[in-house]
Image 1 (cartoon, rainbow, N blue to C red):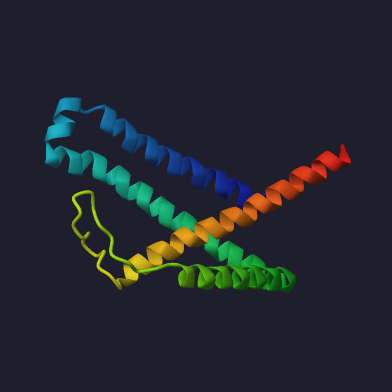
Image 2 (tube, helix red, strand yellow; image 1 turned 30 degrees about the vertical axis):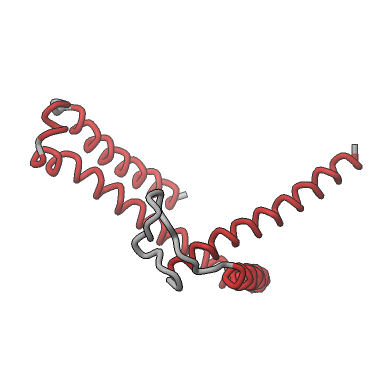
Length: 153
């Protein structure tokens, strides 16, 4: 119960700080806020920095709690590692399905970083193939689930 109160106080403090920083932006003249870099740095930058740090802290806490949960439950750890292994195999397949051909822009010129043999091209292609593979698998399971639902009805 005590940790719940601490969490509520922490949430309230974060909300008050965010609200204060947000209200400071609305207190300024819109025209001046758009044109004056000094004003932007003094009013908008603190809100962006605060939001960025909140995001980083949230990601770290989420990852730490997930890892803690996996460590405390070895059965889930096995399932998670199995799932990661399957995803790694699919990424491996997607990487070898991709190519590293030249990438041209609308003017017919080679894009910067789009030269033939570029590893960036290869990884972009792998990402596209990976999405296609995972989307196909998801589609198959969707149809199977849909058919199961129709059979049960």
